[in-house]
Image (cartoon, rainbow, N blue to C red; front, side):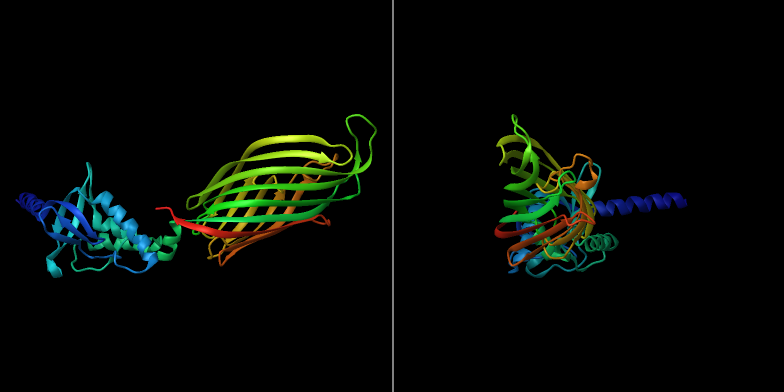
Length: 379
């Protein structure tokens, strides 16, 4: 008998839930939490407090646009299941409800989904689904989604465009000829980037000049001591794409090298890919590895720390280049220790870096200044 009674109660509970839920269709989104049904009734999502179309904050308006986009996709003109809240109707006969979208194998609680992605605060007027809603809010708060970090959310939807110049100089000494060789470079740079993350793309066009001293020879004729300018004209495009704990990117590099001085000659035309990889907590600190992303360095491995300010970070790393020439050593003489930083202040992005070969006087320095000339919302 006991099992029959339990079975009977289960049937009554299921039937009660089904009768409590009505099938409805939303034909208009009046505001983020105000909807018009096809039968003329107005409803709002129970236990939710949401930003409004009438909010004057630009930051909140970014959030409102995304909420409305979500609601158009998930609520507007969909056949939904509606469960009325036990609470009294709101002013102007607006009915507080819990909305569900029926999928093939599940029933999606839309009130809960809006809380989970940070589009609403929990403001209970009834106790229905309280545990589910509290769990959703806690998840959104932990991940700082939507209204729990509105400034960062607005920045995540922004793409800024920079234009600027970078320059550098340095010196090195070969083992074969005890001479100091000078390095100079100047490049123009365009960058499109996201203030919140590390996602961006760069295009650099420039020239590096290396004044080499030593014995040189043309194709015909004896070798003699001379000074030769090696000119590297280059173009580099690089992309950076990120997830929470891993980032990567690809691009391309073009280099055309000529020599001027004792005898003019064209030495090298090269086109190849660029690669970059980042591992760690990308919103704070991580390890970055790059190949061919800079004319100064053919590869770099860095430890990077991000400041809270957009685009601002500091790094220390191990770098390798190929402009130092030695006929006796391979990797060793090309390795540098580097330190650098960039800082964003009032539409200007300042860059500085330096690198040295340990226990020598060989060093290079670079400076850069980029100006934010435009910013657009990506949605």
